[in-house]
Length: 222
Ligand SMILES: *Cc1c(COP(=O)(O)O)cnc(C)c1O
Image (cartoon, rainbow, N blue to C red; front, side):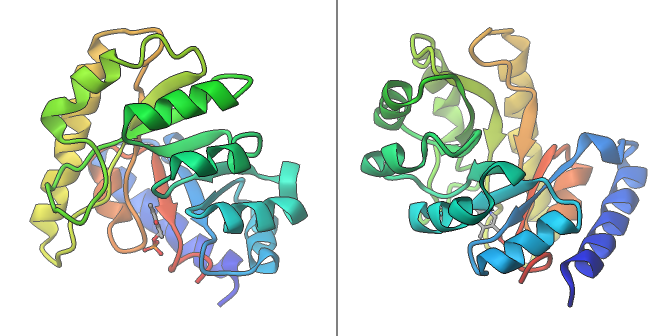
């Protein structure tokens, strides 16, 4: 399928989820996750009207950035090794996987302006998942206050691997509650007004539960 066709289906689904939850579709940004596809396919997404592209490996990001660079806004969405920060830092606007202080320190050191970061939270507690435990998030965020190039604009999670919609919904709801707790602190380095949650199989649930960025690969670009 053409990206433009996939996108129009996704937009309809987003509208329906917004109706159900009394939200405005313009408050939701679609990130096309291009990790499985070529730069040409990523370009097709831009031509269809997507502006945000996401990659989870430095090689993939650099390859696509080299051909598309300032035509897109770039998101790093996967777990990020500290030693790879220098490869991507001048290319990305957003990092969705801030999950440890050593990574914050490296981002802070390598960036020459504030990077918009999501703190990744392991809401479901699955051992295989990256991210900070929910009970440690507030402490972690407090520890970021001296890093002038880190701006915590929100929280990110990946739903647990299950078909059970209720379990998926609970994990998104848990992230939203944490996000509101952090936001209420009104920290200038951690405004925390965004929620990065929802992928191909669960983005409508995520939107019903408050997502502002959805990260869609398979069902948008393949
Ligand atoms: C791959 C990936 C996605 C997109 O997954 P799809 O199921 O293909 O939509 C979203 N977020 C992260 C962190 C990913 O690694």
